[in-house]
Length: 228
Image 1: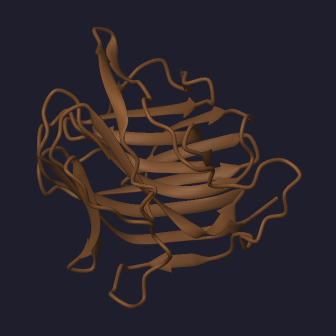
Image 2 (image 1 turned 120 degrees about the horizontal axis):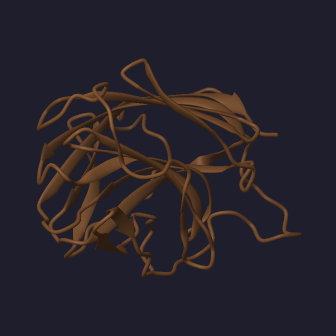
């Protein structure tokens, strides 16, 4: 297996909204119960993706897509439809934290999604905060049995998002115990409560649905916080 957590997950569509179906496995990101962790606990972290100064991101290229550090950005490119990929930061485990990152859709269909994964346990267990190029957002939890649990009723439209290609959006997640708060461009989107995962790794993701050829860039990542 290549040194990567830019995973491929199969995606499906439901008439009531966009619904992701996980269709891959992978090695655990965190130690299983009872095993000691050699991961440092979370503290302040910034990444402007300057070559030679980036964090420990796991990146990959294959026939479905790639992730790479390009022109001081982390860029995820997906050529295939119905694919979700992400790259995770391996340096720190974060519990309570504030995370901000700039994300820009460079190409691809407007219904494509992209954003932040957090409190990642392994390939199958994490929270997801994604937006789309046509102004929707979703917050959900993925569990080890393959199910997605939405923490908001559906994909939610918001005027807080800059829509279309090359319109940057500053996304923010505040995680304090079970209280999870989400912002776009400094505007509050929603706050939810969920106690399933209390710490984990951080990831950046992008996903295609009916069409491929998506490219998304991330920049100016900033995390402040600590592990429980």
